[in-house]
Amino acid sequence: MADLYLKSLQSERKALWATCRLKGLAKDTPERQRIIQIDDAIAAHAARAGAGKAKPKAAKPKASGGSSKGKAPKG
Image 1 (tube, rainbow, N blue to C red):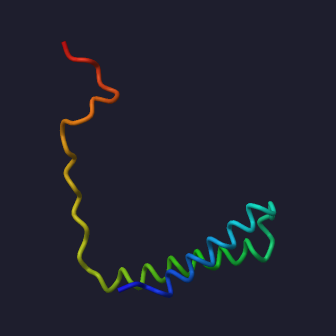
Image 2 (image 1 turned 180 degrees about the vertical axis):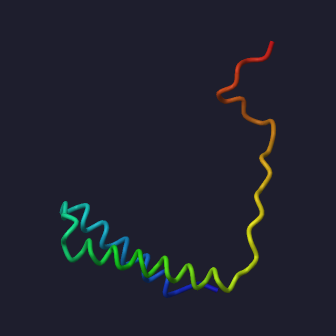
């Protein structure tokens, strides 16, 4: 199920950040302060959502083979 509260926070943050970037606003402006508040709210929401899920994620094993980027040629 979609988390609408989280989506709305992320949407507001994205819009504010775009405005700040376009206008070149300093860190002490109300818009930048609101971004900090939103970041805190997102972190708190993630902590609450994470507290309900006690199942830790297992590390995925790395796949061997495939690409030879960055490796010395064989032969």
